[in-house]
Length: 403
Ligand SMILES: Nc1nc2c(c(=O)[nH]1)N[C@H]1C(S)=C(S)[C@@H](COP(=O)(O)OP(=O)(O)OC[C@H]3O[C@@H](n4cnc5c(N)ncnc54)[C@H](O)[C@@H]3O)O[C@H]1N2
Ligand code: MOO
Ligand SMILES: [Mg+2]
Image (cartoon, rainbow, N blue to C red; front, side, top):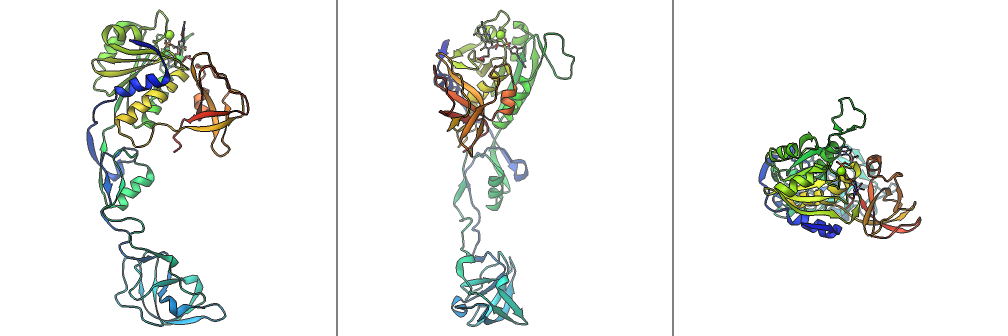
């Protein structure tokens, strides 16, 4: 068992365990939002499939309309119309115009369009108060070229990308199965919300903050409830967890007599590492139990969230072959001081303003105060042995992905 790893060493060890291909499933578009593509998607169509108009107006020959103005309008003969999806069958000759509507193909013979606001219709003639211009013609293939790959394996299906897949003509998409992530809470004192809280008890918040983080990272959370601090109970629940890609436990990984998760995994599994030189989350444990990777997250509510974010989320991203990194990094100016720690990389919670490039502390930074994760939107990263003073530039990891 390795111990006292750096954050980088710990991440490398966790990622090494993210092996194997997730099965692929095919879903109709309406069920594919938020899933990760398992195939490259090429456009089945050219769009527009011919030059078309971006405005409602009249298509004509630009040379016929040179110098048109309110004082000296140009008069053209209207020879037909072209609504979107219904091309004008003829050709536009000299001195002629066709009424066109946004999305309609530019009729043969025409090379420019004038917007309807700059015209007045008089029977089968139209007066132009401005010259027609080619700038409102959308060229063939402007949006999509047939055969070109616009979405790739590993791309998350965001609203824009789901729409793009539809625009390309795909009705069903191959996506990766969601990795199944078990969430087991441990602790005699841990009580499910809704039940009365005895003196000294604490509501099981970890299960629900982790559930949210797992969903956000593209996984399928499997709530395994809570077990008391008894090795037999922990082992029984771990072994009966069913098919999973990753198991999260919370609590029971530190130095205490009742920290049984570590003891159970040492005895019945293989502990890959225990303890990382970081705060919060120092007692993090990573193990394998019969082939299943287990992240033993420290019980403190902030610590379990931060460690999942730093290690569990990258694990899921790797399994899902995600094209984007699990989190971004940027620099911001500290509006408040942030306290570092001796020999440890520190992750303080902050409120980041992307617009101002500033970050301020959420206040109380105790690992037991979950409000810092509820109202903070970023982790402020301090290298070992370094405090940050007010006004200093600091490294920040947004908790919601900022590309
Ligand atoms: N002598 C030492 N004591 C501690 C050390 C240390 O290095 N030496 N490390 C501290 C650090 S850092 C952390 S973090 C915690 C980690 O503790 P465990 O993983 O063993 O977790 P527990 O002891 O079971 O619980 C800690 C704390 O968290 C609360 N908790 C647990 N589960 C939940 C839950 N599901 N929902 C909400 N809150 C939960 C629990 O009641 C405790 O207050 O150890 C320090 N100790
Ligand atoms: O590292 Mo513990 O995670 O601070 O309370
Ligand atoms: Mg403990």
